Figure 1 (cartoon, rainbow, N blue to C red):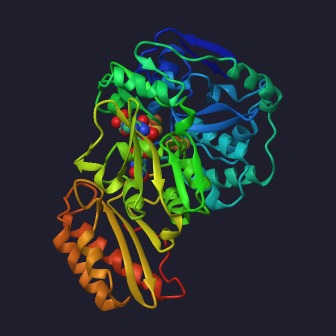
Figure 2: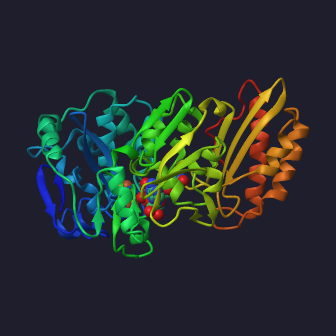
Figure 3: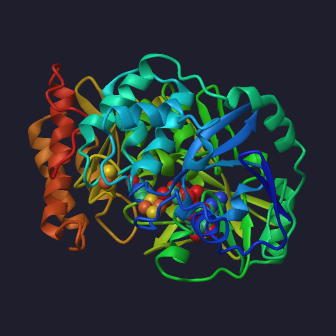
Length: 473
Ligand SMILES: Cc1cc2nc3c(=O)[nH]c(=O)nc-3n(C[C@H](O)[C@H](O)[C@H](O)COP(=O)(O)OP(=O)(O)OC[C@H]3O[C@@H](n4cnc5c(N)ncnc54)[C@H](O)[C@@H]3O)c2cc1C
Ligand code: FES
Ligand code: FES
């Protein structure tokens, strides 16, 4: 049975449909129509809800796109919608401030913006416009204009927001902790790595569900129905980041948001890049393992990890093996995973070898957009000579790929323009990118070559004339 709290009401659902989204459940079954459907693909944020998780005696709030969240994923959690915020007939301070700040016009986006802002305030981050963009970048508004929304959010960040939720926190934690294991035929939720391995071996045709930000698009966009899902959500062994010496091990279920927060020191370029990954809602829900297993040629983490020579630990039944990420992708959206096999961990043997790593994502919008080209360039230079080159691209081939010819053109050569001109030429022989609605083949190749030159500029210009965060239209 799937069990969760809808604010403070216990919801129990026998044999939950593994294809039922929280958005459809709220609007159709509960008639809670404050949560809106804009795109049903995680892009607009109109359906943003809040999910509370009991962690270390407290509730950790995160925002999620209800259109890409399954009801089964709520097991053991608390769900809050815009209907839950007003208290004793008074608007919540977030609602009040947005209303008084004229931050809503037609109001369609407003419930989603309210919920994202609520979570932002609960995390009490620094009050600056970059913080607001980070937390609200996944909420589109087509008519108000963003200035009043940003101003209202900034005002809320200046002093702590007080509401009635802390009064119920201890009781909510207790009630969530009292919810036991979930068991249903078509949505399995194993509670350990061994149980997961056994379940997947038993049902190799089932689909693994991590955050669901890719998988659930099949339901809402391709109108597919999953017969059986196996959720990885309650396998704690998959949700950990461990740095031992210089060796980093990241559990496959670690959210992209957690990677961004916790890898700031060990992998600063990677952490900084994640600010350009989708939206805050998606980063809190989506996982690193899901991003790699999805095997998209334009996924952002794969090229970055390829340039760090990452390896994957895989598990099938009782067998474990490790493979270089460079061997993992076997074709367009294909991997070497066998039936019943899954990723347990992402391994980086030596984080210090990523000091020369620079990452660039080129997309049409800064917030919440998919890469046209992603470049990951990692060079070790000693006394002006490139001694080691690890370069990978996304968007340039059917899979994320290392640029071996380009690496060969750089290795052993001086760090100068001539070297980079021949390395850029090597890229022409190495890749034949596709033309699609994101970019033409010529554009992709030109951008890849220019990013290579940008690396040289960054290495040789002390003023850092070129900003890492730049994006190109
Ligand atoms: C609006 C939007 C914006 C996005 N923006 C970006 C972006 O900027 N950059 C980007 O790279 N991606 C982006 N994505 C894609 C997606 O968010 C990421 O790929 C995310 O990391 C997927 O992780 P997940 O946990 O949600 O995976 P899921 O959707 O749960 O799973 C994805 C696939 O991997 C399989 N899988 C999951 N975990 C494992 C495992 N441990 N072992 C084996 N198989 C597994 C699943 O069965 C499924 O086939 C975006 C998606 C949306 C909807
Ligand atoms: S409806 Fe647009 S993000 Fe969910
Ligand atoms: S107020 Fe109309 S879409 Fe934002």
